[in-house]
Length: 318
Image: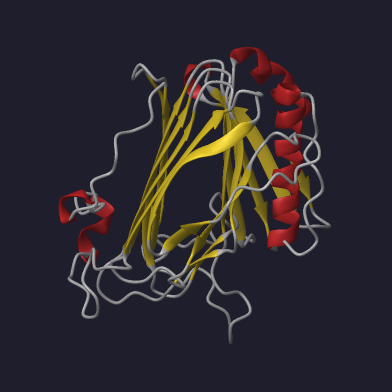
């Protein structure tokens, strides 16, 4: 599997979600720095492969400010040949007109763990929106754990993302997102005071076969988020998609029970993705710590099934 062609960093290539119907009210040119200005058009390409000894390495790295990736680390004692990479940003929170493009590619039998150095903060926006376009490509037998820190939308923020996962039938990807309701302990709180969150994730095979597409649009101004069947009494939502070979799906589904824990105010559920592509796991909670713990416990089950190793304990400062 070849890596994507070198990215042409020109104005033509700026990520554009202007055709998305839900973003139509937010297309005014920012009054500060324009869309695509230097420092507002982040680009990141990570390419992993195995070396002659079978160890996975970060072979390809290309980035544009404000995105930063430091040298890969090998701190996972359960999978010592797996590189661990953290995506950082030098630009602070996402603001009006920010556009980001991320490409993560794993060649045959490569492994990788990818996360972020801190939560992704979405600042107050007056004119435009912030957008993220991601492509994740996994070759045969490869394995990726993608567990970023939570997304924190401040009051009157607008954010849209689209993630395409192109996964070989023998590969596995664990992809998670955690969305907070806002800055919960800021002043009187900013719970669900943002303007809109639009999140789309779709999976396909390398030959283009479409497997599934999930999109949710959270627009607190149009529908009360506290309604039963939406968020009701919960503040945090985790969305996890696992694409894995069909032989792994049944055992993982049987080993993962839906639950509601009234004492911890936690709830979780699991279902199958269409096309025998994998599993969809969702978690609701009130604080990030317990939600992250449930997500990591599920990730540990996936790793145990695929690699025969559990996920190590999280660092205490994370």
